[in-house]
Length: 244
Image (tube, rainbow, N blue to C red; front, top):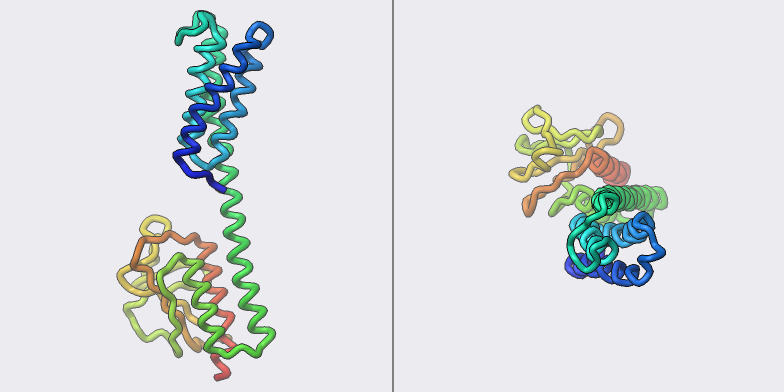
C-alpha cells in the first residue's frame, strides 16, 4: 500500500533530522557505523511508502544530519574525519540501494495481487458456466466486464458469429495481437486505439462469436499474461452462447 506522496516526502526529510538530534545526546558512546545502521531504518521506512524520491530524500537527509550532529566539528555541515566521510557516503549509497530493493518488492507484491485478481475472474466465470442457471446474456455481460478490466480497456461488447469486420485487430490464444496480418508490439505502442480488437469465442474448431474490445480513452499496455487471460475469459461463454 502506498502513502500520499507529499506527507511521505516531508517525513523522509524530518525523521532523519529527529533521529540524528536524538542520537547526538549519545554520540560519546555510539559509533558512526551504529548511527548509520540506525539511520538506514528511516530510509527503509521512507522507501516502503512506494515513493523512490522519498527514499532518496531520507538518505540525503540522513547523511546531512549525520554530518551536522554526529560528525566533528559538531553543529556544522563539515566532516573532518575521513572515516565519517565514508560513513556518510555509504549511508547515501545504502539508502539508494535499499530504496530500490523496497520498490522492487512493492512491484512484485502488486503484480502478485494483480495475477490473483485475474485468476479469480477466470475461476468465477468458469464456476458460473459449470453451475448453469444464469442466462447467457448475463454471463456474457459478466465476462465482457472482466475482459475490459483485465486489458484496461474502455469497453468490451459481445457480437454473435465469426469476425466479419476486417478493420478489427485480432487477439489470439497466445496473447499476440495482429493488425492487417502484422503483429502489434503492445509493450511498446500499447493496445490499438484507432480500431477495436476482436477476441474470438471458439467451440472446438468453430468460431461461434467474438468480443470487441475498445480502448480509446488512454493508451494501455497489458502484458502477454493479461492478454492470454482475456482470451481464456472469452472462451468461458462458448458453450452458453452456442446452445442459444
